[in-house]
Image (tube, rainbow, N blue to C red; front, top):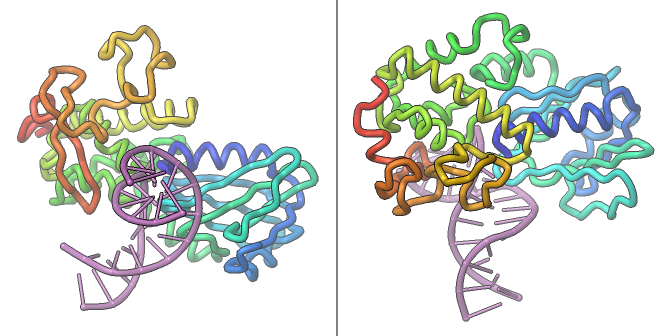
Length: 275
DNA sequence: GCTGCATGATGAA
DNA sequence: TCATCCTGCAGCA
């Protein structure tokens, strides 16, 4: 279930478990055997994430770049690890911890130029602190929007515009900011663009903290605390086609946008809202 | 047990 | 716009 918050959680947990250690690396599946050999026995110096991309740096080797795509996942075992399945692309282990990676879209060793090119085409990540990026990320996001004629609902999935949002966050962020998903990105006004950025920061940070995506304000479902919400109460519109909007009761709408299904409330996000 | 879908992204047509 | 990569699992029989 990898949207940006999951990737940053992996970065944090791998940094804590593997950082500073010499790592044994292998590829039971075989597809990454050559790459694993390049980092096998090296010391891992840092792990960081940008959007949905993970970067692992080593002493004496180039960077390991991982992108989970839709299916990829890590499993971490601190004791009695089960043997890796034949599909395990990569194993990273110390004496105490074993990390298994399966199903990634990308698992590769990249040189500094390739990494630079990759990072250059990623938009600002709401989870990356401002000081590390130089220019103000909220402004960069607003500028990116102003240069796109595609609907805002498509722009939020474009990782060059903003890095880290996936299909759930796009639907929920647009609902929370009351923006019509069909509005061309360049027509989103400054106020709504900044609101979208701030909302993304809030939602993603909460996701990193809790490990799951919860966007609902507790009062909207008659609960006291966010942690009390049941599994079917955590989102406003995602996958809720035809069900009543939690704010106004209007049936939630649904349409394909940018190859992915999008849900929204036609009353809380009326045509043209956000401009 | 089987089918089809999924929180992603790319490359061909 | 579509097909494809690749894995896990919900939903159904």
